[in-house]
Image (cartoon, rainbow, N blue to C red; front, side):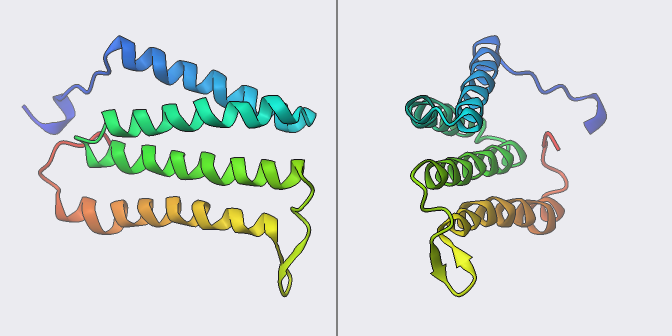
Length: 133
C-alpha cells in the first residue's frame, strides 16, 4: 500500500466540533464587522478554545498540528486586531510609523514561521512518515 492509498478520517464528534468552530468564528467576525463589541469579544473565547482543542487532538500528525496551531495564531491576531479597533487604539502610534494594530503581526508571523518550519524543515526530513499534507 503506498501513501496515496492511506485514508485519514476524522471522528464525527471531532468534525462536529470543527464545524461549530466555523460558526463561532463567523459570529466573531460578523460582530467585528457590525461593531457589536460584547458579542465580538465574547466569541473570542469559544473560537480560540476550540482551535486549541482541535490542535491538541490532531497532534499525532505534524502537518495537522502545525496548520491548526497556525489557525490558532491567526485567530489570536485577528481577535487582538478586532479589540484594538473596538477600543479605538488601533491607529495610536506605537513606534515610528507602526500603530498598535501592527502588534497583530506578531501572532500572524508566528503562524507563518510555524508553517515555514513545517514545509521547509520538518516535512523534507520526514518523507516516510504518514502526513495529511
